[in-house]
Image (tube, rainbow over the protein chains, first blue to last red):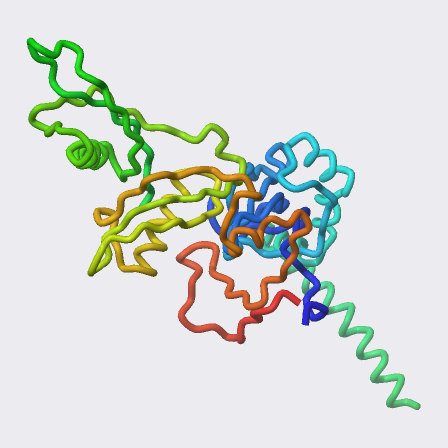
Length: 141
Length: 176
């Protein structure tokens, strides 16, 4: 049954904080306190999440994992975090990209929306042109 | 409710015959200082022949954990009044702070034995080493390679205003 799961709560697992003051930031599980809570840390200097207890209900596990000791201190955590290139790996995931796109869309002003509209029109024009050409080619065959 | 740990120091009021009465110090878990002082007198009454009217509190200070970032295994001995008699029990909780462990204890006792704060006397809250822990439920976390999945995930909206009563799609409760 364990083989059905790919993301585990384990020391070094990178998580996305879903709720609370550090919502939207990523952190690393340093230790497990009990069945509901883990001790997580950003590290604070990199992601802004301090070392504190976080409920499993308030986090989402990601695919990223780094190699750290149990209850590791900030200096060693920062080293493992940067060597593991966690931030880069996270930004590359489609999960992070979707979140960033949502933020971007929410922060659009009217001019941005106008530019987006023009771009969409141009794109659909190109697609329809190509589609028309293909249909015409298949009809003449 | 967050509990705080207070150090309450008190003594009998000095009189002509007893100019320097013996000073007593207690570590009380309470929600506020008022309750802490009240519990101090409750315990002093039981153990010494001092009443609140005959005594004075010298100081009430809040105590904090020395290392609130480290996980500790707390072994708590307490005495509580059940509906028929008094019981001594020992319970263990894993937490970062003493007050965190006591908060867990009080909610746990309320749920398991229907006791309330006033019916309990916390005798000792001690951070024990992993070797000294007695409960399997605490021991199971003493694993440097601990690893488990989160099988049934009910995600909640990041803010209350994004919480919706109806959803277009069925939520996915597994994490792959």
